[in-house]
Image (tube, rainbow, N blue to C red):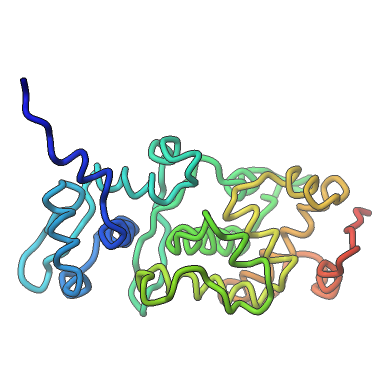
Length: 265
């Protein structure tokens, strides 16, 4: 009788510290520098022994990077519980993220992006529905949502306006994920509740515009208008656009009213 493989039960019962480190390492194409994981030597050793991560380079260039099995597991950990296997097999694209002044790369799902679909659509004037600044702003937010591992509880995080409650204690959240959540928090304050809720639905939960309209009881085609206003403001927040290209910003002040319904002229 062949011996049982001890790696399988170990993987199934992997500790929270190891899972957090794996998510952090897998978020970046080039992994993390050795100095960044010095305080997590034991979880790092476990990931390497399980072939979920590997060391590359030597000396000051030594880095811990996720292996293909490690990236697959990270996608399962980062996806909604009901869709873990599906998340593992989704194609991921790289998005640039500025982290502590250094360019990093986060992995995001490009296969179901409503923004990518809208970017390919042209209006009556022949121009794309979303301009470069709007698209880049939405994708930057989506990369931060992914990097911050926010999707399983994003509704709870953003349902209020105070921003004081953020799930687990901060000392238990990987610093990279925390930084991404802080950037999302700043974007939320810049846009306001209703506008930010729309971009979260589209960029985070990947909801289609018809779904956004149905859930909010909005008229047909109104979500496009609101999304463009929100992305204009988000682009300005990120410094990607010097002037708004959508409808006048004054109109956006009305979206937050509890009984407001946008109209399409």
